[in-house]
Amino acid sequence: MTSPHDRAAKLVAKKLKGRHNRATSPDVKGKVGRAEVKTSASEISTALRQLAGGTGPAYVVLPKTEHKEALRRLAHLKTGLMNYRGNIVKKSTRQ
Image (cartoon, rainbow, N blue to C red; front, side, top):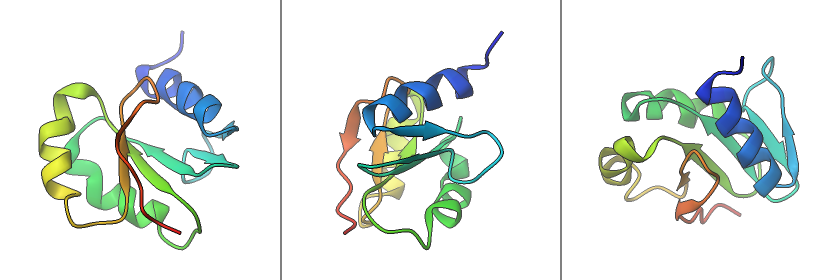
């Protein structure tokens, strides 16, 4: 049985035209961007460190219940936000 984290990572990987690899960070590396899947908004700082250093759009992926806090914490950052289904909540402005 797969965890909600892995299911979300696979959906996001499909949207970003990439692959989900449990052994590496970030969780998803794709042609359209990168994403780190987390379960809580309190993990955003960890996700940002894991997304640092790459190029192109970057997203933190969180469940819907965490979006309000996540949007507040990501308000002035270039990193975007996605839900567990791979839909963009806040667009990434990273180049």
